[in-house]
Amino acid sequence: MTMTNDNVKIKMIRKYLKLKIIENNVSFKNHNQEKNSVYDLMKRTVLQGESHSALIIGPRGSGKTTLINSVLHQLSKEVDIESDAIIVKLNGLIHHDDKISLKSITAQMQLENAVGDRVFGTFAENLSFLLSCLQSGADRRCKSMVFILEEFDMFCHSGRTQTLLYNLFDITHSKQSPMCVLGVTNRLDVMELLEKRVKSRFSHRHIFLFPNEDIEANNTNSTSKSPVQLLKALLVDLLSMPSGLGKRDDMETPRKRKVKGKKSAYIEEMEVDRSNEYSIPTEVLERCKMDVRQFAELDPGYIEDWNSHIAALAMSDIVTDSIEKFCYYTANEQIYRNILFQLVCQLSPNKPYIDATDLTTFIDKTVAPEHRVKLLQSLSILELSLVIAMKHGLEIFDGQPMNFEMVLHRYTKFANANSSTQTVPRPVILKAFEHLQALEIILPVRNTDSIYNSSDTTASRVQKEYKLYTLAVPIDDINEAVKNFKALPTEISHWYNNSVV
Image (tube, rainbow, N blue to C red; front, side, top):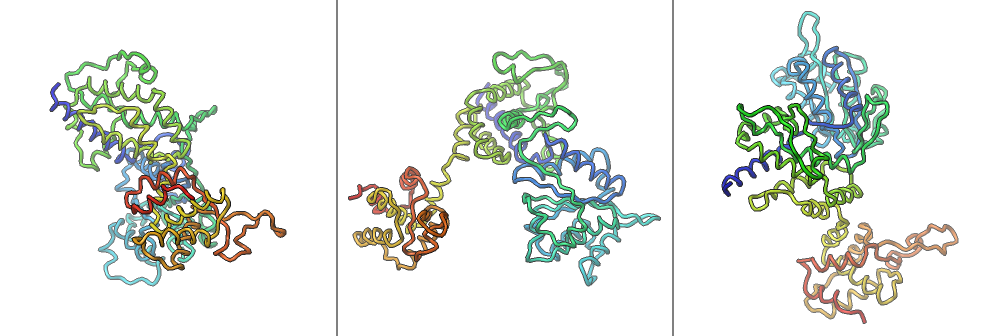
């Protein structure tokens, strides 16, 4: 195999896996009960003309939007959504105003010509006119509508009237026309944000979606997989290639593969056609304007070797330990996908396979507790100088807390000894010190001797210049931040590294 052929194959593998990780937003696994609930609501709206409303609640990255996309994808195979229903998608971050929302709704309904230069008194009149334009037939029936409201909590902002939500929920409540309203949010207290008139017309149907829960709805003895198992399975699913991608018409029927070692634990080849396993849905390829035939040059043997490598990678102890570390910090699948995307981007003829150590490195960079170091490096030179002054003061006074005047004294002493250091007014230094407190880099010391309240802090009884504070970040993190701070002036670095006398 020449280097040119290697380069072409690696490029095609890389291109296909990138599409699979980033662009595939219709494939959804697990959460079968929640998916069936959303599917049932949409199907009854489209086929039977019912009206429903529901909230899909879950943390960011739990798959709320992907669940809706997968349901629409599944429903499109059973009914003609384009002719039987209209999908309207709004986002609370973009459509924050009623006028902007109406403009987007009109455009997605393709009714700009019908509205023209008409002037409406209220939002409700405008929306009623749009719905009347969709009515057809002898019985004047309206097309089914599916409203998907991303960032639902932004539509409930206390500073705005909830006219949009009221009118949508009122239509579903009074059954004026078949409509399904789905709100997507990550706030559990979203119901507290709704006005009484809106809340009274909402169905109070909540669908909770929490990450890394694999509960089979049809299984009475439902068991949940651990997050580590789910992410290992996701690694195999996202990084494996479909065996039928490089198939030719003259290829023989599927045969049983012989796999040695640990690989056999993950790969049990059956006497069935699994050529479409791990493949990207056709709709995703069409949306990306990608022709799957361009991948036909891939050798089936090469794909088989690649999948075996990925299966062995998922079984390695190093990868298991790395994923366990990842799950300790976060369960966000999107962050995990970003890590896998970076791994795929590193593929080249000189590095045709993914190493377990690479996954460990990317996980460490993503979720390791380096955020404190990055926070320190994001400080201004003045703020970091105050941290250094406080660190030296704590060493001198054997860890005793310090107030602003003590820190200012040490900083002024350093500034006077260095002519290159710019003189900073006292109010500016005090503001920088207060910013350190806001970032919780320094914390006030609790006053346990208070006769009023054992939980009192010195902040409640002393002027702010004389409140006692202590460092809330480890010394090791400060050492790392100063060491790798490229923009730090030389004199400050020298001041930090000098021994305190």
